Amino acid sequence: MAARCPVHLSEENRRETCRPPTVTATRDRSPGPYGPRLHTAGEPMPRSAAPIRITSYGARWGAPPRHGTGALVLDVRDRMWDPADTAVTAPLVALTGLHPEVRDYVLSAPDARQTVERTGRQLLALHRAATDEEIHLYVACWYGRHRAPAVARAVADWLAERGTAADVEHRDMARPLIHREPARQLEACAFCRMAAGTEPVPLVRDWPDAFAIVPRRPVTPGHLLVIPRRHVRDATTDPAVTAAVMQRTAELGAELTGDLNIITAAGPAATQTVFHAHVHLVPRRTGDGLPLPWTPQRQ
Image (cartoon, rainbow, N blue to C red; front, side, top):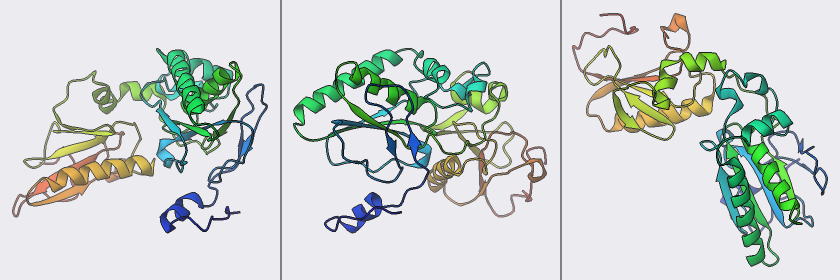
């Protein structure tokens, strides 16, 4: 059931604040002095005695509505270890950040404990300055299943040890798993090695979520590949990753003069030969002799 909308909100804020729930409720079963609390994604958290509210979420699913009171955002995508990134921890992928094995792995990353303590101290400082206002912390990873829940729970526990209650909501932890390639395949992926900086690459453009290179066998002058940093098998695996890489391709294409093709493939029958999603940006001119469909091997 959708939440009732306050009549004083603008139309834009009503759409954001009053949108219906999008996933089932998630209970934080981690032990804590204030017990488990149940919240439903997309609905405002109920009033409680806890002065601090913590929401973990997956950036892939979009940011949660921001509250008007004091807020901090902690993005751990590049600061904590993801269990899906190495073959040794691949069995942890099916678990969540509230399982001890995942929590301990995430918090064993360099500076993880210091990040938790630093964030807790910032929340306490905001709380002291905010008088009666609630303080909100948003913790983001990519899917909202492993790193963000583990860190959110760790911050709440740090606060509890110092006598300050915190409500914790894990907005995206219960979402279905999106297919992830086995970690051993990621370690063998040339595009992943390029993204990690461990393989030389003819880099043309570099963004936080993607990069552009000159392919080894360009089919026309100016032919580029735009590649997402996150490993997904093809454009159908994760629409959010596809949307981001297509946006970067369009940005790059807008800088070129003349006609062009923007092409991606999904599967061997569609001529995909590298199973890390990528987009071809192919400048075209009349009479260039390039037939479609084509493969990199076709002359």
